Amino acid sequence: MRHVTDAERRARLALRHGLAGEARPADVETATTAMTVLHATEPATPYLSLWARVPGFDRADLDRALEADRSLVKQLAMRRTLFVLPRELLPAAWGSASARVAAAERARLVKAVVLEGVAADGEAWLAAVRAEVLRLLAEHPAGLTAAELRAAVPDLGGATVTGRVLTGLGAEARVVRGTNTQHWRVSRPRWTSMAHWLDEVPDPLPTREGYAALVRRWLWTFGPGTEADLVWWLGATKGAVRAALADLAAVEVSLDGGGTGWLLPDDLDPVAVPEPWVALLPVLDPTVMGWKERGWYLGPHAPLLFDRNGNAGTTAWADGRVVGCWVQDTTGAVAVRLVEDVAPAVRARLDAEAARLGTWLAGERVGTVYPSAAMKESP
Image (tube, rainbow, N blue to C red; front, top):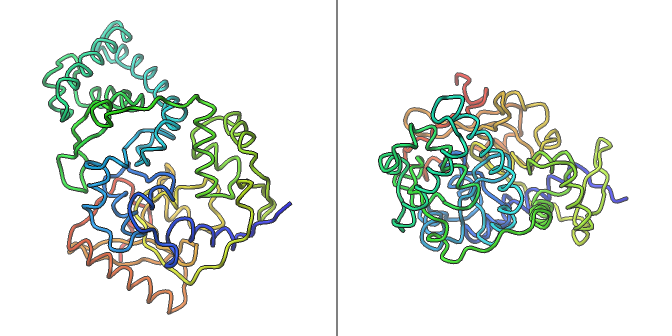
């Protein structure tokens, strides 16, 4: 059995994730495809994830891909998380992870509207408001905001219930978060019919094929990974993961510490060691959130760098390991906070990267609802 050391896993991470200098992707589509997906729970995260990977990245580059070309699309999928997906990956997500989320969302909402006194018959209420929302969006190709939909459909009720209805329709790929009405750090989309947004909406893949397609992409981006990593990342069952691994003829490899990981059968060759590198990644970046078992790149620092619910704050990386986080002061200047000692040369490169990010942000401060303990520490 092939053995993959932690050092090789860190080298693969650098090269596959576009973080080492020689592996930087040329554009936002290439970078997103390389990562499988970008996290988009926080509006600023995909912008900052791309800034860290694409040389010369400008905010308008992502806006163009999302809103003009629509080569990238926001979609609720794995673990009820909002992601930016390459357009060609949508059918796989719709048939598998998104469908699983949609079913769970629908059941919870039907139960909640009855318990909260919104309606006596949750199924009938949901069918009626969904039909009205879809009718309105069919009549407004440019989309409507959640506030506009609430005003037009009084039975939707308050903002929370409206959001849950739209979330469910989004998971089903009936609607999509279209044009953002605010700046890049705030999400206030015009909800738009998926049929209007994509013109031609492909059919979802069958469930098993969808999971296999997602697992193939994940193994290329994050492999080798364990079964536990995949079950967590997909928000799926062990049965679904095992079926996908079998369908892909994935190959077992041994890992440092005695664990078993998986790789694609055509991806077993060792990778080259990249040149030394550093990176500053945002809250919930897909790299730091790519695995459940994180000791090989996180060390003992999880309590400092993740909140109690498992959400990652900002991270500072050096040669495939997390060594700290980054924060901004009241002027917007960026500073690195280390959680372990690093060589002076590494610290200098991290400080240079912080200065580069500060210049790009130009005084704009990026807030978060997921600050880590390290981020909240007094300087």
